[in-house]
Image (cartoon, rainbow, N blue to C red; front, top):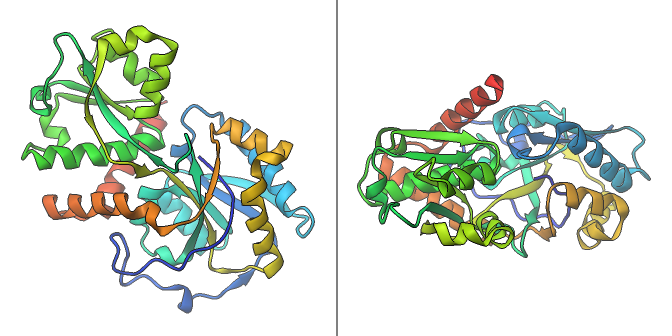
Length: 325
């Protein structure tokens, strides 16, 4: 989900996973003055949101933010994945981006994007994921799901949930998901994952816990027939960044800082938040990344594989699903 707010943190250290030691740093690239305003967003973040609606709401919001100082407001540009966004930032096509925390950790060179805010849902920028199974006749352990069907969301929550699922399989010395489960199917939204488990058309699903709780409130029968088998720690969802390859004035930085406290106090900001089901934005704090970084480290240590390679494979897989549709 896209968000814009402010107060910039220090650049992340090079030794965090995903950094490419051979990639050029911001010191070796020319800093350019912004001539227009364009914000990047990956299509993976549009689960349940119409592309045209997202484009319109974002452009209106950016005009409200930058209208006094910039006449050329391009708005949002959509890219297939985080690597395309990285290329766009390097090429100067955009001067900001909203990406998943998991995508940020996989960037070849994170120094080109500086986080300044995190999207808030249910009073926190972090999401807890759960594995759901039927109460009657369903699995009682992860091992019980061997050879079964598992549903995952194709949008932004599905990517982080997929990584967590791989790690908990390795913790129990089980094969990776592609070999352990009979089938893992991507669906467009949490309800399309939960309801098949409710009706016993699928053996399990991985969704944000908040989505499961909301569905229980709307239909109490769901809570009577579906249970939580496993639960993740809170993991960062979406962050917004500014490009460090463009020249930001003190006035612009102050404008961004003010907007973080007032995003819901304008019609443009309220429209933006409602569309992306956000309750606000939080000023950036590096502690938001701690649990996600730990999960990525554990994946690399247990699998002996590079996290960046896993992300690349998942991006290709999800892009292929989008192309089919």
